Length: 380
Ligand SMILES: NC(=O)C1=CN([C@@H]2O[C@H](COP(=O)(O)OP(=O)(O)OC[C@H]3O[C@@H](n4cnc5c(N)ncnc54)[C@H](OP(=O)(O)O)[C@@H]3O)[C@@H](O)[C@H]2O)C=CC1
Ligand SMILES: CC(=O)[C@@H](O)[C@H](O)COP(=O)(O)O
Ligand SMILES: [Mn+2]
Image (cartoon, rainbow, N blue to C red):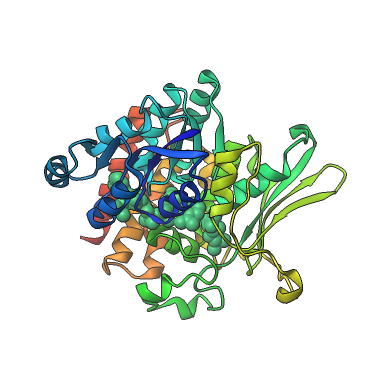
């Protein structure tokens, strides 16, 4: 029986992780979980899965739930996230919170020698050098959940890392892939949230529309696979059937394919190196007929250029990229800035910041906060 700590149980990845646990009750159990503010859904999850520890974001929710669920340890805030992630019984921590708030619990989980099933890409973007160093020091595996990185990981099984020529990350193009830049003026939040292939949380769906999701994934791949940026390519592939590819020195290309269903990479991370049955829709290529590919347009998707530049600059630059993006997307979702302003404020933040190399955790925390304040100052 594998015991799971789940950060972000009420979200899109969290819900699908619970579905995987539900499908394999004899293999997995939920021992601890965190949520944000969705307390109705939390009550349902607690009743069904009965974890030992729950963390909520707000103290007010903690006050209510602690009197309601007397046999569950209830905690809250950033300390609560760490308590969930370091729960003594847990073997594996699924990091499915949204944003850089996932960094500190992930670091503490590594120090507690938990295997990490990593969905929360912002953690690697903001502090990849520290996360990978800690994982190496503590002998902890970081198993990718993000579909592209899971695909690459699957293609690399039994391969020699020294024989890789390049990684090819596929990108659907997001909600606005058929629009020109001019047509992006005045697009609505509702339109932006309409991803063509995946049903995901709001923030990543907007990232997908701006192509920042792919930028974050390039940086995530750089750290996970120790790959220089020059060897990471992005390819437009609108069906999201090929989840990513690896080209080797002999020009052989390995790809992983499947219908878009995040339960597949989630389950793979939980069962690795084995596989188990999953009631997912089989891939029917005859029915799909055609798979499309196109060259990435870096003028159209400026956020992808920002990410490559920030990644190559290194130091605190990816932290700024991530924090500015998180703040800008939040402002867009609140209706306070337009879709095109997202990339404008990110560009301003990157130009404003003076990079510091090899930042420690404290510096990353400070730069993250300063960047968010800077972005807010731009619109006030
Ligand atoms: N969804 C997907 O298919 C994929 C997602 N990812 C990555 O996985 C992560 C999660 O994405 P997704 O599931 O879509 O996101 P969702 O927005 O659906 O879920 C986020 C989860 O995190 C919780 N949360 C949000 N903010 C905080 C906070 N400040 N403190 C504590 N908890 C918080 C939410 O709680 P509540 O709702 O209760 O407020 C919810 O449980 C992201 O990093 C994303 O990039 C990667 C690949 C695919
Ligand atoms: C499911 C998943 O992993 C997402 O990150 C997905 O890749 C988003 O799709 P695009 O960013 O390619 O639109
Ligand atoms: Mn992805």
